[in-house]
Length: 413
Image 1 (cartoon, helix red, strand yellow):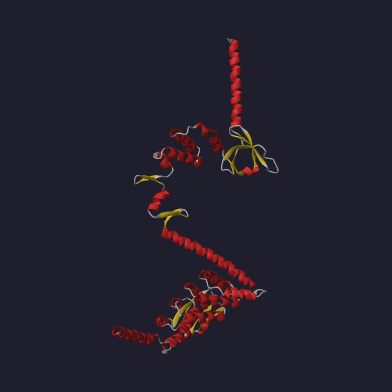
Image 2 (tube, one colour):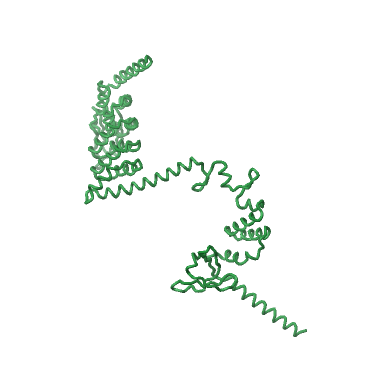
């Protein structure tokens, strides 16, 4: 009996050794997935890692079999997580039944193997199309007697998945248009930058020709940016010509802004020349808004432009802007007891008879000055053919009478 027991123990030890060795072979420490050109996958440990010129892949598979793959057959090699390797090892142990595949899907869920679980759930549906738990796990909803994915359900309601969320066809169309617009605008920024670089060089003539030929509304954003940033007045004048040629609302707005903001008078006047030909109500509205600007210089430049537009709708706002009030901060330039003065002659030729302020010592002081704006008066005279000087009351009486007369004439018609 003792001898038989010794033999049995030896047999048990041998079985255990074989099991351990088999376990090591079946679950290699460093596994990869080899995607073949045929579409198949081989999972295992790469044995010839140090081969300098890759002509073949020697692989020990998860089942312990050593195979050699020609490099031309291997499309891609991917590293696997330990859980993925274990899945490849044990998945054949589960029967291809609804119950077996569901157990394997639950095994994957516990180990967060999302892709592998999805594959098992899809297999369950192939075996049993009405398996409710698998359907719901895959995101299906039971609607109108049918199992529908969220995408199918939203499609029935008129929605499509686009850029991270479900949207209507109209919303997608707008977003696509915006995307195409952004691409086109970026392209024009690049083109304009390249052609601008040619100006003044060997390709100057070609650069000017290319810029002058631009007639695409998508180029307005790039032209407007160049109009603000380009250091060359000559180049800015060239951009104004192109913007006027395009003539869209955004192009006209860029010209109007430049006619006020550009530091060079020739550029400002060139913008006004173009705008005078266009005669846009949007431009008149822009300049009328600028009549309320905090800067007296802007008020008068806007009046000059309105005088050239000769739009009667600007008369009322111009009357209000005949005399404007502006604040100035006056700082002492020297030490204690120094004096800084401001006088009532505003920028742009405006004047404020008797206006002015004085600061003696102390910190910065704020002064409020009234300006009689000559350019505003000139614009009123140009539009109306009347001249009541800076008498705002007389202008308003006259303007009210004009509106009343027009109203009576309109009723008669």
